[in-house]
Amino acid sequence: YRELYESMIRARELEDRGMILQRQGELHFWEGCRGEEASHVGPAAAMQENDWLQSDWRQYGMHIQRCRSLEDILLFWLRGYETWDDETARTNAPGAQRRMPHTVAIGTTIPQAVGMVWGQRYQNNDDVGLIQMGDGATSKGDFHEGLNFAGVLDLPIVFLVVNNQWAISVPVERQTAAETFAAKAPGYGFDGTLVDGNDVLATYRATKRAVENARNGEGPTLVEALTYRRSAHSSSDDPSIYRDESEVERWAELDPVDRYESFLED
Image (cartoon, rainbow, N blue to C red; front, side):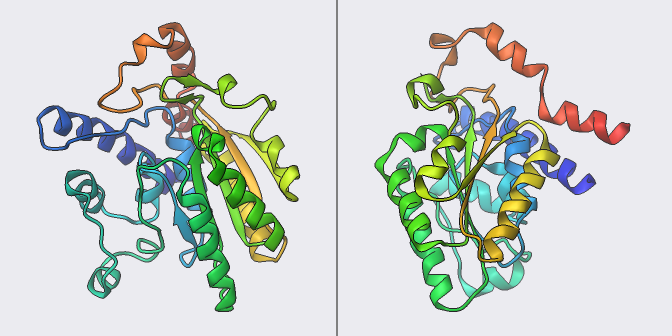
């Protein structure tokens, strides 16, 4: 319980520090994640050390929970630096290297990550792949291709859609006519589940079930974590142009860190 809390707090502090560094000219660009921490940390905690992670770039809590160092995260933002050499693999904590590279092109990594998991099955490994994306990525053709491929091949994959309700300035109702993103999963031949993305234990439990099912040969699952991005999309964004501040205030009352603190104190 305390480990989950630590990862959430470190992710929030890193977000604050990263924005300061960007304003000081140390970083060219920075992504916000305030309010989404539970949807990052819980799913990452549900993975085993040998499982593979593919995520987008604002998932700081996910990488912190998977033992990736803050230095390594900041090096990526500073100079696009990433490495998977043998020395790094030996010195980093278990699980830190079981990830695929970041990319700025939205959604393009989904079919690539599915192919990587397919390759792991050819090698007779029992590794599960957790492939994370935002709600905006579900509007890309790569989303359909990846999920269709995984469903047809019955691969051990958990698709995690972090629905923070804004793809930069485009609201979720302009992304899909479906009631939920989880409802799309049966069309690809597997189950989907909707979970409270601001409850770290709920996201952990839902992902844990999906990971265990995948490892037991029951195929993919789509987990939709419903949350809200209270910060700007990035250091280049002004959210006041496209959303009402009262909406942000309502979601601040559901802050995942505050909720989890209350749980731990009780």
